[in-house]
Image (cartoon, rainbow, N blue to C red; front, side):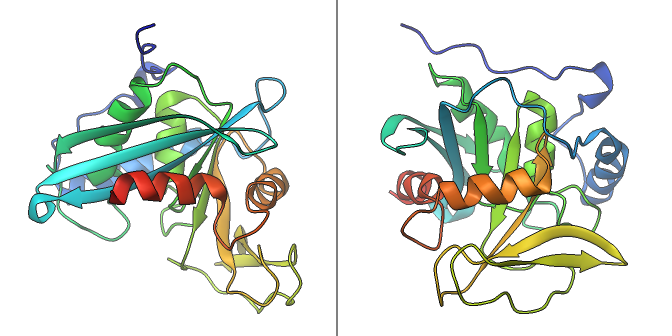
Length: 229
């Protein structure tokens, strides 16, 4: 059975070039962020969740994107794909989607299974321009996506209580842009934010469901092994 065709943007004005300058990339982020959906629009029950992670080879000249698909809720491995593409955009904080998404789209297009929900090792709405990689990817493929990052990019927050499942809001300029979630008791929290088509409470719920034992969701752990292999 051949890989399915990759998902396509649902609106013509979502398409853009990838060979852009950092300044042009910022303008694209500002243009697209108004399309981000911060409410639940899931296509029925969640049966397959996917994690995405990106690494680099050959001194950073090759981008290696990995996607791991797991059954939900048991989180058993189901399918995986890896894609390598030339790295064409420089490392610029806040613009990582322009460096990484071309390879991610290639990897997603190699899958036979269409994930019902994707968790990115990246930020979504918790971004200086409210348009991190998880938002960008979600818009381009029109799928529910969550950003689950290991560290803060912007905003401020208090310390969440120690027990697993505790969380506090991540705020910036008077707006809640994400949640700081304790996925394991007494362990450093993760930063959860909306990518696309998922409300923040739902994003927290699925992040915890995908992280039953470790700090990072199992989707991220599986994808990281592929991206770093």
